[in-house]
Each structure stands twice: as structure tokens, then as C-alpha cells.
Image 1 (cartoon, rainbow, N blue to C red):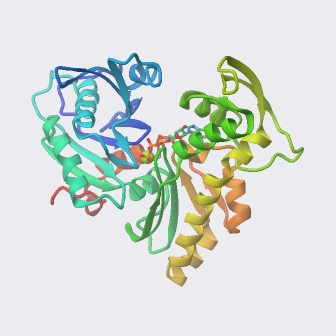
Image 2: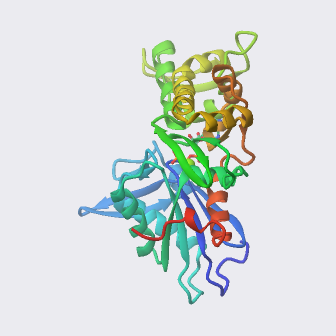
Image 3: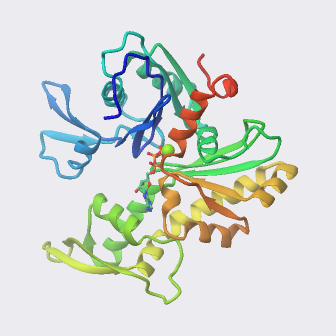
Length: 345
Ligand SMILES: Nc1ncnc2c1ncn2[C@@H]1O[C@H](COP(=O)(O)OP(=O)(O)OP(=O)(O)O)[C@@H](O)[C@H]1O
Ligand SMILES: [Mg+2]
């Protein structure tokens, strides 16, 4: 694949997301994109990793008692340190074959609200995975660069990154963050909302994978104009008699299920606008809001946000890759963007 393991040091940028991990290699682009999932076995009190990424995600919710498939990142930061470190090492090795002599420099993005302890943990994992230097970049800045926003200009730009675990809303000017808040709502909450809706309204129990499939197939943030929208057939367990059952769900039902997380995202944007200094807020009213992250792909979310906030809303091209692309671009143009990468502390 792509001539991995060349003789040159492959400096890398990593988007360590709650749902997906992406690795960008300098001069090559995004060359790894896998779910942030690890399957492991506990033997004599020791965790032994069995599978990572795509292979491990297939095991989520389907493992026997002796094997666990988990997502080591939660709310955008490391929740299970040992497992996360092993996952980072695995992905770095997969990209950086051991034929090179120099250790790579690695830049990782972290949520704006990450604590010093969390930042140190991420830096440490990257160094112990074989990096020569470990740099950190604030996720909203990476997202905005990746979406092609003019963040170095003296104008206000607002980016809303809707990931698996969190939605980060940030206002930037002159390549720095003026306002940023992270709300614990994102793709995972949407999946949970669908699961609980089906349980309450249809006595149907479905797993996370099914809920995610419903969301990405017919999910929508707005009531369909005809009151029904497209339908999809789904399978789950009937909670009344315990047997498997197949049923149909339509977009109006999914919109109802998703109304709470969608509302929380709208509120996060409104709060950011209220807290932004007036001149920058005026810039945002002029230029609109940029959506990034996988959650930005929810059907009609841009429209729902526009209706509720009155702002122009754009979904970034390659919204799932924005943060990795932006982190990568910061690495490529490091001299020009030096102050956005933090190699110390
Ligand atoms: N078409 C789609 N419609 C709705 N949601 C989608 C779509 N495609 C992907 N998603 C959701 O996007 C989320 C993953 O997005 P992303 O990769 O940006 O998250 P992440 O960066 O790993 O998480 P975080 O930034 O919170 O750490 C998942 O919840 C996934 O279900
Ligand atoms: Mg993300």
C-alpha cells in the first residue's frame, strides 16, 4: 500500500478520535483510517490484545465472555490508558514499518478542554510508541484548517466539530482560539437515543451497530415534509416475548428519536455565539458556520441548525477527515503555523 516503510522518516499527524483513528503521513496524506476499537483477552490478570480497528469493531457486542472489545477513547480523551497506548502503537507501526532509521515526529490533536494530565498521557503514549518528538494541536484549530477556513486572518471563524463522543464549538481569529466549549453530545448519543426510542416506543431491543446503521442510512435532524420520509427494515429482539423480530422504521420516527441530541448541538452553537465578542460574532453572521466530523453528515443537520440559529451553515468537504487533514497540514506547513503545534509541557 502506498509504498509504506520508505527509507525516509515518515512524520505523522494523528487524529485520535473516540470513534475513528486517522493517520496522516507527511507528503502522502491520510493513509490509515480505522475504528478506535481494541479486542483483548484477559489472561492471568494480563490484557492481551487480539485485534485492532476494523477487525475489532466487528467483534463489538459479539464477543464471548473471555474476550472484550472496547473503545479506549471516550469523550475525546483516553479512558483506558493501557489499551489506548497499545492501539496507538499498533496503528503507528502499521504505517511506519521498521525499515527506516530515523524515528518520526508525531503530531496528535487533543480536544481544547483536555486537562494537562490528559495531554501528558497522550504525549507519553506517542513517545513510547517510538516518536522522536510529540506535538499536540487543538482539535478545533485542526478541524478549521482541514476545512479550509482562513484561520490566520483577523476575522472570526466558527467551526463545529461533531464527533463520536463530543461536539466542539470554537471561535477562532488570528490562528488562536477565542472561545471553545465541548458538549458531551455526538454520534454516540445519537445511537443511544435511537436505541432507547426503539425500546420505549416499539419494545424492540437493538444493538449499537444497528442503531448506527439506522442513523447513517435514514437518520435525519428534521421532520420529513410528508410526515413519514423513507423507511428501513430493522431487526432486533422483541422485549415482550424475547424472540427476534423484524420491523420497519421511518425517518419521522428517527427524527423524533434524535431530537434531543440535535437540540443540544443547536444550543451549543447558540451559547458560543452569545459568548463571542460582538465584532467577531458579526463576522460569523457574515461568513456562517462550518461543520466537521462524522456527525455533520447526519441528514439535514445543516438545515436544522440554520433554521434554529439563523446562521448560514456549511458541511465541510471530507468532514470525517478534516481534523486529520488539518493536523497534517499544520505539520506540512510547520514553519508558517509553528505556534499552533505545542511540543512542550
Ligand atoms: N452519514 C452519517 N450520518 C450520521 N452520522 C454519521 C455518518 N457517518 C458517520 N457518522 C458518525 O460520525 C461519528 C464519527 O465521527 P468522527 O470520526 O468525526 O468522530 P471521532 O473524531 O472519532 O470522535 P471525537 O471527535 O468525538 O473524538 C460516529 O458516531 C458515526 O456514526
Ligand atoms: Mg474527532
